[in-house]
Length: 193
Image (tube, rainbow, N blue to C red; front, side, top):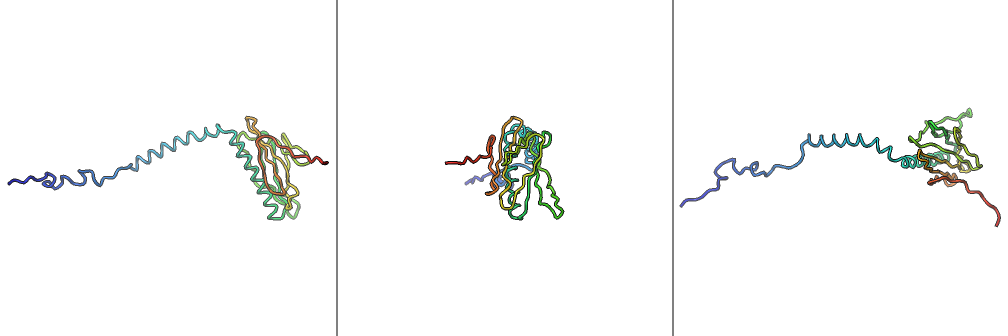
């Protein structure tokens, strides 16, 4: 009787794991992965500078939030350090900025921290004080924050190149800066019944 044998059993390499494809894992080589990362990097490098031009309203909102955060931080410093801190606003068409003003030293001098520039296309339009003083154009003012919260109330209006306006109103007694799309004014008390 003749027995039939499977050819894979006759040849020692026939039917090995390599021939059957078992044990071979699928995936990408290191070079393929590096090429994909390189292409993504080049694409992002070309697109990201252009995204900045697409969103002037987002730059305006970001600047508004930064100014509000600086107001709240300055008031926080005044309360925790029990000293009068301030913010200087420089309204200028070319390079508007704001910066924190430190308390007076023993000689009555005040130092300034580094100026914070606004994003490209965003300008400080005006600073409104509670006594109805308005600083506009090329003016400069310092708003002081007392440790007790009785001073520091003011409104800062920002504008972008598309004439979109956002305002930041600071309430020193509660230490909150609120920002609003558009212009804001101080409420006037109207006495009487």
